[in-house]
Length: 110
Image (tube, rainbow, N blue to C red; front, side):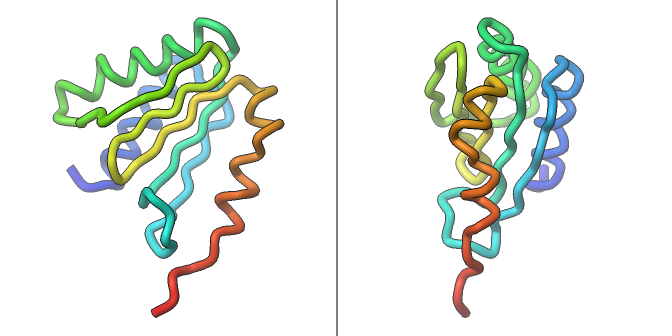
């Protein structure tokens, strides 16, 4: 699968399982650690972890390799190598403002 197809599959699972405010950031022209970042809101608590479990259940059979994750009820960060997924409660998302950080990354110099 291409990276676009992989991101589309991630977004599809998150959307199907009722994640909200899903955003995708293409960072392939920056020096960030991943080429794509997906951020989504959970309803909170157990929904955050449940969304992560759904990603594993749906994507591992398709060949997606989960390299690592850091989990709490408020925020799960999933490392898929060239894709990073953040599933957060709205309060955490607002507090950490990842969109602002990611949008401010400078393009890689040629």
